[in-house]
Image 1 (cartoon, rainbow, N blue to C red):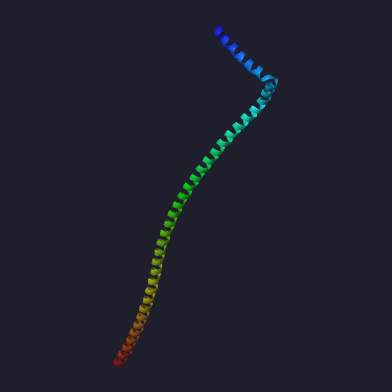
Image 2 (image 1 turned 90 degrees about the vertical axis):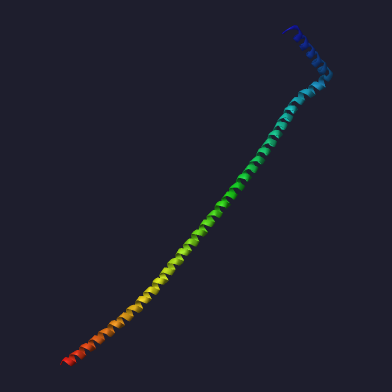
Length: 145
């Protein structure tokens, strides 16, 4: 240390000694007892700051979570609506195909009924022709005899 620093140190020590002598013994005791209280006050202040920061972080977390959930709900509702539209179009298409199959079935029933009528008519025609041929044979046999 150079002499000027020593001089500054001595001056600071004199100031501290003057303050301590001005406080006296009760002031020194109060100062010694105030040190733990200052530690407690410091701890409480730091705890308050930490709690404030935690509350802000929790609020940000809640805000972010709410935003994410809202986005998820909106996305889910859009997907669900698209699913509904697709399902409805598939059901309509299946309904049309079913109606077409029913129409084919009904047309086939009508076709079978028409074939039955034609078969009955053909049977009647064959029977009548057979009878006519039998009569002709009988007439021809009767004339040839």
